[in-house]
Amino acid sequence: MPSTSPPTQPPKTTPPPPSTQLPSGKPGKYDYSEVLTLSILFYEAQRSGKLPSNNRVKWRKNSALGDKGQNGEDLTGGWYEAGDYVKFGFPMASSVTVLAWGIVEYKKAYVAAGQYSNVLNSIKWATDYFLKAHTKKEEFYGQVGDGDLDHALWGRPEDMTMRRPAWKITPQEPGSDLAAETAAALAAASIAFQAQNTRASKKYARKLLTHAKQLYVFADKYRGKYSDSIPNAGKFYKSFSGFEDELVWGAAWLYRATKESSYLLKAEKYYRDYWMDRQAWAFSWDDKKAGVQLLLAQLTKKDSYKKAIKASLDDWLPKGSVQYTPKGLAWRIKWGSNRYAANTAFLALVAADQGLKPKAYRDFAKKQINYMLGDSGRSFVVGFGKNPPRRPHHCSSSCPPAPQPCGWDNFNADIPNAHVLKGALVGGPDQNDGYKDDRKDYVMNEVTTDYNAGFQSSVAGLKQLELP
Image (cartoon, rainbow, N blue to C red; front, side):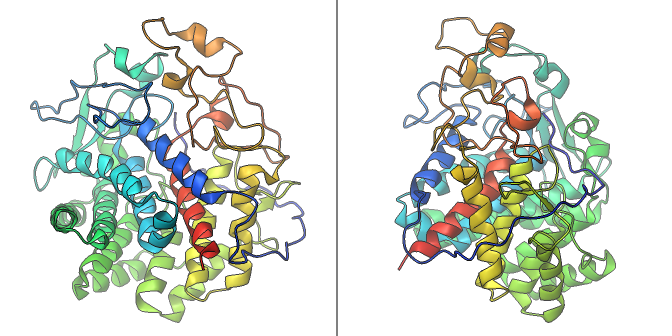
């Protein structure tokens, strides 16, 4: 299902009083290591293609082994985007960028949690797919599976028989946002793999960077929104913010990965040209503006970028325009309310590490993530904490073990999902903390790869604050 960014802001309500508690360097009331472990398992449950022999999600099997490009190219692999089985390249790439950023910033947290190898393997499942999808220097497959056909099915991915067309961007049908975001994802991932410091990981990092550079040239040379070139994607993940933010974003990540000044010059020029210093509405798969502000502040230490990201983040603090639920969630909109708060929490933690309002921003991040883990009175993470969701809008986990049939009767059944989709963050509550654990409510109760990206990276940041 789509998880779009609306163009308008919700009304402001009175926020709760700010907390005086900060991460103290000591373990808190939630086991962040366990949450990281579970979140990585969620991404493993989303895997498409031929699963490895060490597959840890035993109720998932090989699926979509016939995924091919228009000329027969192998497009197996990658992640299913949400509760259904389309592989949408744009949100997948955005998720990888945010996850890789979290690995780069908070490697010590993953090591301490015993999840460093697992998290690198997790993002590699997606980056391997991107390499396959980049079939020519100026060609990239941005979607596999028809969203309309896919959403008409309720069942296991292993049982799919429907047609799964593939769509690509080309010079004639461009997608600057998709190509530049994928370039950002591959560049960020290359930094993460380079830091693993093995011969194999360094070789892989170089390969990722080669493709990232080619994709960025493609994005910059042929301008256009990917959702205009792939209309089926536009029904579910339309590029509302345009491609300009991704052009800055991709160049900034390539500079961080290569230290080649040409990329920074381009990022800063496009930042000025496209007015990226304006206050960001949110940070999401669609809108990278706040991420651009923070990344350039990290890379250049310039006050102008620091001022811009502080303005965007301050809007989420208790005196900003973002409304709060009575129990303390910074609530942007109903669709994916947890996602927006978690994404902002991650940016706030990275900004704090740069010396920007460390007390206020870390306190904000801790309150938001802990709300999702249980401070709200319940957990919003499947398989974790008190009263977690048991009926997420997620086809495969709702299906009983094969060969039992699975269909719309399973969707409509008011019983917990047959399998526990460990680590999945559900969409979240309404503005009054209202939430119903209902599989039919995909606005509040669907799960997606982009929901977990900022959330997982935030948890890693909070875990790192606990380390000595």
